[in-house]
Length: 209
Image (cartoon, rainbow, N blue to C red; front, side, top):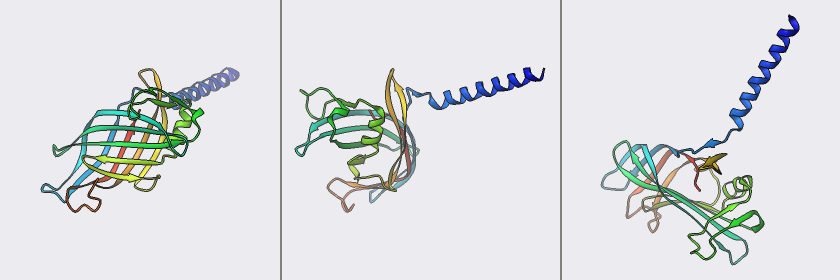
């Protein structure tokens, strides 16, 4: 009887451990993007601060071209229609750029298209996570006609996680971002002539591809 109980205990522990492993290793399936945080508008005729309430993907595109200095320049961008709790709506998005020096890591498509309308991907999702998201050359956080530039990860823009996800049966990278800061007009870097947007404790998670 004692041997039977010991065997049952071992089986139960093994089963629970296996279930726990499956929960950790199972990829995210068809995830929706998630936003949180606040957006503040200043230097306008209608200043406000409001929580992000809802969102919908607006458009996305990718591109690539050969750099004059060598390597392949990779571009990925995505835009969302954001609605705030106060009823205001804004368009915001993320733009990533990376010059990849090792073309053997890449699958490059649509060479006859415009350089801003070409698909690309890394052969390995791990390489994409490490080299594209983990070591980008530039990121732009855009909102309406305003932008924040980042040339590297910093306290105002951090990639806090990259996990595997399955989207329509295809494996992708699912990223988590934390960002904040002031977004100025493209031609008004000091915020003298148009409204300024401020991200407060903003977070995003989703698939950018």
